[in-house]
Length: 221
Image (cartoon, rainbow, N blue to C red; front, side):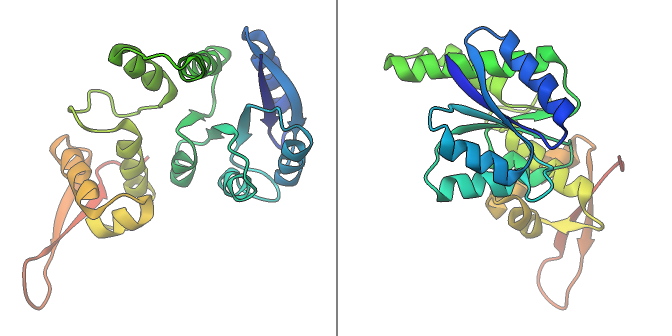
């Protein structure tokens, strides 16, 4: 049985999410918490917790800060982050995330994929590549369908959200600093967004050398 800690500052939402979790075979709610301090306290009291369903917006800390503190304390508990669509940093905090609002079917798909992954890893057996792709495809949340081969949906989402939330044009270096990817990776995804009409390219000329490429999101949300 996979033990889950449900964390949300809204007690009613926490209860709904807990009820969703309990409806998925193989999962059990170990506890609920409504702030960062409570989440960390429950992890200390309940070392058997396998998974945290963690809301990003908490009254005392963000979900990202909770994950960072968990890791600092040595907790390697898995996390599914519940986040608004524009929260870039939270995507980096957890491989698995849910974008609000979500229905039971969305959470069930994440939990079932997570359970598949645990069975594969705990069993010590070898998984076929198709199985690995299926599991991680279900765990990741992509808003950029049809990405070319070699492009990560998570990285595409990070770059996309950085542009959408920027107040002005950004360079590849600035995108790299905001997302944690390399400058070369940021440049590759920015060019993809430009080719698909999602981003606009402008040139900034300096005193000498080649002009700097700067990008803006093509359509504001």
